[in-house]
Image 1 (cartoon, rainbow over the protein chains, first blue to last red):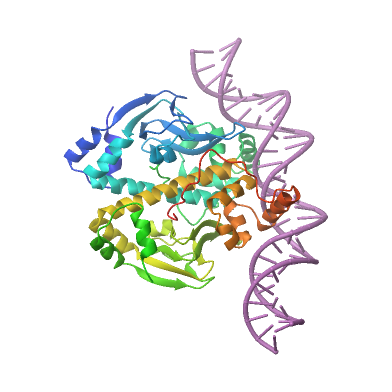
Image 2: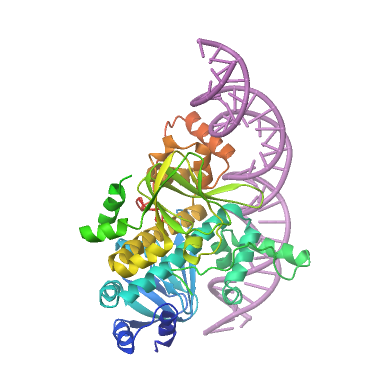
Length: 215
Length: 215
DNA sequence: CGTCTATTTGAATGTACTCAAAAGCGGTGG
DNA sequence: CCACCGCTTTTGAGTACATTCAAATAGACG
């Protein structure tokens, strides 16, 4: 399994010498997860950051009545983790599951800490990624507070145009915060109203990267 | 105006030499904002991080129909900014307003960048703060998706016990994502049901710092 | 095919919202 | 000290957006 996708991602933010790249890559562990396989489950401690080399991950929680709530998608080229658990090394609440056969690089928490010391540029890299994630997360909060389900879907469509055809729509429903039944009824309405696509109404603000999952 | 609150906050995360503290403080600008005064308004570019030395700030957006949506509170000892605008240096959508007479330290964006180079420990400091903010923001997202308004208020009460008595409840309503009218009706219900406080039902996960606003 | 999962549809329900108006509360000035 | 003004909170009636539950339909994969 090669590191080209990951090194490309790094080079979008910082410049590493070949030696530094080498040093970084020595800490990576490859892993394959079959469709529906889990990288992490509720109650476990998240000991790695996951970089998706190929495939799609999703991170979700279960509420007390068994309902799934999708916190994040991570397509190829994105990082994923249970950030609460990763940072605190306490048991987390996320499930991280492969939605298709997926290949990831594991970066152990401890290696990440060490790399911050060995190669300070990596601290910058992750700081910037986390900043972008935070902005995206706050934007999503605002959207959930101030926009209708239709508008939230329109945002989703612009943000993840590829995912729409690749994942079952019940997961998209969960991400935007509605039930699959209601989501299906929204779609039926668009079709009836002749829109072959979705409300075009846009916010002024463009498409933001989402973060610790981040493109 | 003194820097003790801010330096104390720094020392919770990193150790600075007296010289480094001095260097850091040279970049700070003091500012006082009267109650209802603004540090930032929609459409402006956020050129500083704000550290609340005394008082309380709130950050909110307006939707197309004029409704306010409260993204964050920042009591004394917390940082505040329009992070999208601060990071991208594009016009933002947040209003940042003082809820009481407030004193802040301004850290100019450019100074912050320079300080990352001069004192790499500060990059760590802000990385950690942003990480905590991100975790808190994601937790709030999950709460908005999976919990009722009552449960969200119970969380709020544990997270910001002091704020409850200090800010008008319409702002708390906005933070947890309900109208002031509905919030008032919830309170009436608790009283009628004999609970002088609020649902005690807890999540397993404790009280998390919120981040770029962060205690 | 048969099985499993995903999607659609419908009816009844609920949670939270809108709008309007009244009541409460706090400060300021006459 | 009281009256008034602005802002916040409460209350009520009607409504809307979204949910739940149940059952039928459609797809995907072995």
